[in-house]
Image 1 (cartoon, rainbow, N blue to C red):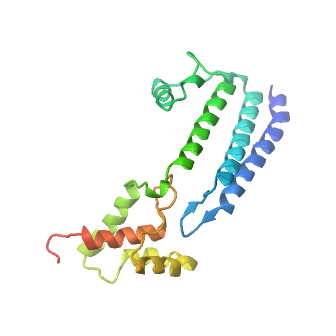
Image 2: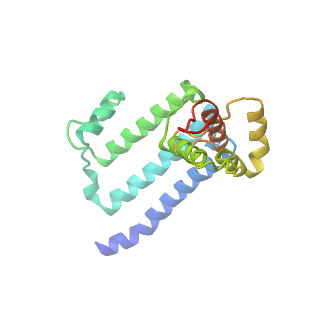
Image 3: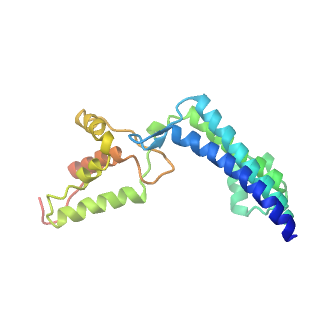
Length: 211
């Protein structure tokens, strides 16, 4: 068994590594520091990323199937099963345990559904209040409460943009909300964080005893 694992591991690892690198190269080639986002703004780019993702998932499944046959029985918890049912993916769920191939098809179907959602929905209008938004606001509040007026937290964030600082400043001076960034990342786009902090300080930041 150990010899079989040794003989198959390199080929599995190489296949997975190849597909991961393809996907990573696709992501980074579309990365915008100003947006702090992986910008897939056309159906063609999204389709290419979906193809890379499917290849990567299939390579991982093939490797797992070779190395450990016991992985061919996968249990889905009631909460996860309910999530997939509510997402309209009940047709991919067997009544009992899943085989590895069934699980892969379920994951790929979920990713296809997400890509379709991204095409239809204007995600530029979606916002959510993350723990990092709260952290930014707390930092600004603490600095003001300590009367450390020379330490401008928003300005420090702006300085971290380096080559995109001028573009961000132009956007802010026009009183335009900057790009929000990638929805998966709780750290939103840096320029947006600067804009958000300035709005927070202007409209919401109050510290008892200070004007």
